[in-house]
Each structure stands twice: as structure tokens, then as C-alpha cells.
Length: 295
Image (cartoon, rainbow, N blue to C red):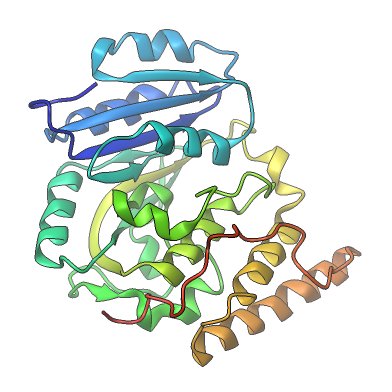
């Protein structure tokens, strides 16, 4: 379950459900990084050959099975088992590019105040490259520019998720900033965006322009079950975020503007708009000032 010695630097949490066909690509991309790590595959109740595939990697990968509860619960289970200095996530249909862990270690060393490092990603659909840069497609920093703190990008993250979960690594001790659960299991979708926004509010986040992850989408029907509730969950995430007390004015304005747009979409769909979030933020998620401004 570890490589290159007993001290674990990275814990990699890989939730999966019925993706035995593509899971080996994800695992090989992690194990080939050459860093000290533990790899935790949390099987969210798969009915295919996932367990057999993971067992084929022997003691290089830890396999954990639990009943089907969704990706948020699977990630939380992995976090609870993780013991590394840094916690990374990778969806089981995505892959890391060579050198990801080494570059992240360099950035954490160069910027010791950084609690989270977020890198850029390619976006693929089946075997076709759709976007060479997740950041560029969302109006973010371009490849080759210097690293930047999250503070200057509130308008972008208030509109949509600005990173793939697999492009994000957090210092273990910073997880306490997010409250419990880290990923909200009661959201039917958009739990990754909700997680990101709480990161931006409570942690020092460094954006780096290196493209270190390949995000892959397959026409396997795995996303259809969550699509119907997507607009409603987007509004829920924005409501939760807007309720936080310490946003500076530009962030709050961005959140309110996006809430209005999503509310208009819901009205067109004929969906009621609740006055308050249906899912409360974790009780312990309290911080006097948000940390996403430049340290």
C-alpha cells in the first residue's frame, strides 16, 4: 500500500463504482509517480469486477468495500483511513500525468503557507481531447504563468467548479478547516463544487498552471442518475456558500449574481426555490475571516 519506504507522504483516495474497465489506468498513473504514497480504492458497492481488478495490484493498493452511498460518502471513507501528509483525490475514470506528486511537493515547499495546491487539467470525452486546459476554458490562468493565490478568482469559482477533484491536493491538517463531513453526503450532485467553495473560504489555496491531470468522460450512463437534480443542487450549493458570514464584497456579489441566474433556470423548469438551504453547513465550519485572500 506504500512505495519507496514506510513514511507516507501522499494518501490518494479513489472512489469507484462499476468502473473496472478504466480503473487500472487510474491506478497505474498513481503508482508510476514514484513517490511514497498509499492508494485507497473505496468501492461504492460495485457489481462488476472492481474487487478482482484492485486485488491484481496486490499490496500496492488498499481495497475498501462499502454499501452504495454515493461518491461523497466514498471519499469521506477514504479520508478517514488516510495517513499521509498530503491528501489527494482521483476519480476512477481519470488519470494523473507523470510528475504530478513531485511538482506538488515542490510547490508546498516553495509556498509553505499554502494549504491546498490546485493544478490544471486536460479534458477528454472518450478518446477525443475537448480542452487542453480546464483553467483556460473557464477564463482562469494560462499555462506558463506564475502560480496565483485563489483570492483574485472569486468571480470564476462562484460560477462553476474551477478544477477537477483529481487536480487538488490538501495538507492533511487543513482538512479540519472544512468541518465534518468533508464532502456533503446529502447533496444529490455538485458535492465537489460545494467542497471546493468551502476550501476557498477556509484554506490558503494556490493555483498552479501545470497540467497534471487528464479528466476523462465516457458514455457509460454513470452520470445520468444525478443529472436531473443538477440545477437544484447548484442553487443549494450557492445558498450554502452565500450564507457564510465573512465573504468580502466581491465574492458575495459573485455568489448572488450566480444565484439569480440559477434561480431563473429553476423557474423555467418549474422548480420551487426554497428560501434557505435544505442542507445545513457543518456546525463546526466557522472561521472569523475567510483565508482565500492572498496570505
